[in-house]
Amino acid sequence: AALNYVALFGTLADFGFYWILAKELTKSKGDQEKTDFITGNILALRSIFALIILSCAVTAIYLIPAGSFAILTPTLKLGILVVAIATFWQSLNMTFIAVFQVQYRMDRPVLAEIIGRSISLILLIPFLIFHLNVVWLLSAMVWVAIINFFVNLYFARYYTRPKLTFDFKYFFT
Image (cartoon, rainbow, N blue to C red; front, side, top):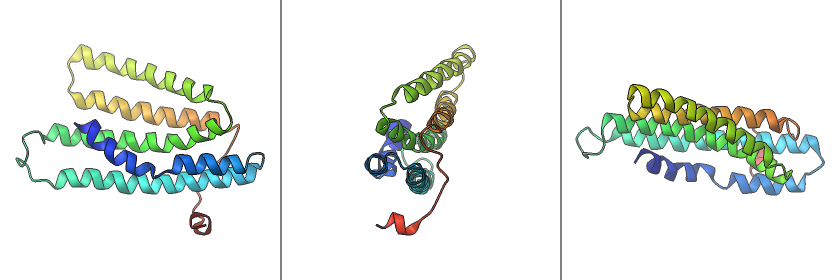
């Protein structure tokens, strides 16, 4: 339930930034300064949108009074919060996936995904051995999303070195 609920808001948080970035990077291919500028602006805008939309998703679930729905347990609410944090990092990670796609270098995000999934498998072991609750399992998603983001950021340095930028002229043109 937590995954499905947050996935709906995660889709809204993307807001088409992936395709906008891919299109803009294709136009600026070869111009490193422009590539860095565009990527930084999209990363900043995506961060803001994801933070606002996912915060609304979490806030809405916590505003529902206790006992209103049998399924809405404190564990589910906490699970939604944890999945929202993972979705935020996954959303930011999609910025670099677009960079790799434009460069025809999808091998790098695949390697980052393998690293992340391997860590997820390692984090699954204590869950199974100690019979931890499902929030532990969901929190593994957060670590995988953060690791994937930073591994892809590291790999992307060959193609772009974005700095979070807020150029309002660029956003509205």
